[in-house]
Amino acid sequence: MTGLDRLRSLPADSRRLLRRALGWSALAAVLDGLCGLALVPLVLAWAHAAPTLGGTLALLLGLTLLQAAVLYGALRAGYRAGGGLAADAVRGLVRHLPRLAPPRVRAVAAPEGLLRGPVLQSMGLPAHLLGPLVAALVTPLTVLAGLAWIDPWIAAGLLLMALPMALALRAGARHTRASEAARNAAEHRVAEQVRAFAEHQALLRAAGRASAAHDRLDQALHDLHRQTRHLLRRSLPAGLALSASVQGAFALVLLAGLWAVQHQALDGPRLVAVLILLARFLEPLSQLTHLDQALRSAWRALDTWLAVLRLPPLTSPAQGGQPVDAGLTATRLGYAGEGADDLLAEVDLRVPAGSLVAIVGPSGAGKSTLLALLGRSFDPDRGAVSLGGVDLRQLSETTLAASRNLVFQDNHLFHGSVAWNLRMARPEADEAALRAAAEQAGLAPDLAGWPDGWDTEVGPGGQRLSGGQRQRICLARALLSPAPLLLLDEPTASLDAAAEARVLDSLAALRGRRTVIVVTHRPALARLADQVMVLEGGRVRAVGADSLLRQRDAWYAAFVAADAEAAPMFPHRSAIDRERSGIESEADPLRSQ
Image (cartoon, rainbow, N blue to C red; front, side):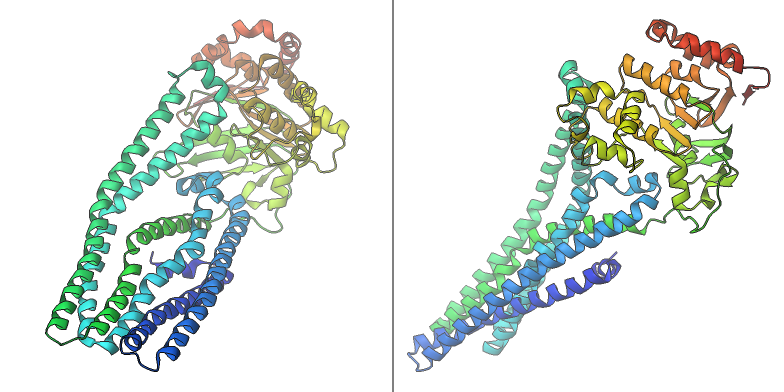
């Protein structure tokens, strides 16, 4: 995509502000060149003691003041264009991101890093790069036009000298493009490892330097260092070539001028004037190497968030159907995502309203992908998911949002208080409702230990809290939500034994009142379910009640066998198991695939 294509892709307001900033910058660059040209008559008038010296000095002073005023306007216009570009990017992403499939977004950029990375970097394009770039091109052209009036031969010579500079700049960009891409990828990996390192600091301190997370971070930093050195080595020859071209051009004109003065083809004052103009011609060009690299980085940042805005959104009708209940049905689901191999294939699932269903299986089986499809985080490549008899794709956004609540493993909160984060699920909830949800999610002990209680600030993304505390808040928010369908991905993964037992009791108590589908690797949670689905390799291995699966599926029998050692921790299970024994019957079939 060319620069013009990128600019045409921007919102109308951003294009208008950019055109204004470009106009101001071009005018400032022309005036800068005219100030250099005004030095020529001043030098000649001073050398010959001409009576026009005062007028020439006044002209130079007037042009300088005018150029300073216009340059101030250009800087303001550039900053305003940068702010407008960032504002338009944020508005576009806020409108567009909620309607995008997360796998498609992650294939382009990390959603949590779009604002801190690409948006802020592209903001620097009009704010910091546009003015110097225009000056590096327009000022030398203005000087060259004035020099052609003074001495056409010298101007023609400079024009020819500009050719090797352009070739050196082009060759340098082509030579370093691959290295820049490798370094950017290494920098992205470091950012991911640093974030993971910070989020698990307590665990890493306990594990010591030999931990796998520390090793991965160390390796990412070494890789970034290596890629940076490689980029510097590849960019150094191009930078040296451009610098040599600039210095060579100055030296060549100086020698040619001295020869012309010696042979009386040019007088001394005119040579001084020519050298002044030459310096004004070459000085902006010497900045092109650094500007070129910064410009490519800004273009890449702009391309990133523009690519996100070009992704096709999930479409929903304005007035869709209404589910008759919270029963969920998945028929022959298939999903490959961005890869060639299917992550899910031929998955069927029938969840009666008010039941508790557990999805289990080995790592990489497709459990989280299936849960995301059931909540329409993205659409399947094949098959369909229906809620209350209505295809999820035929529900309006409002109806879908009100019908289901999702809690994934990667738990992020919004910057604000604990109470504010919880009330996002039910704005009218009073403190009694908040307290009940907190107790059900095992959050009450944390609240008692926080000095500010409900007013405790969680920080950006919940960074001031531990992973377990964030998970408990997200779970409490889901339990507070009036949505009849809850989709939970590893809801007890970061909880201690006491909090896990409380959450298990809460989920069991929802039976008959809400439909709950849980992805879990905890045998204790699977044993509570009315129905258990075993996934393996993206396909359904078996579906049935816990007691039947233990008898008929070897993988599931081994899976729940690990629960025996933890049984004393969960005395509540005996009552639940007695309740389950009355529910299980031959009418609850085992379907093996």
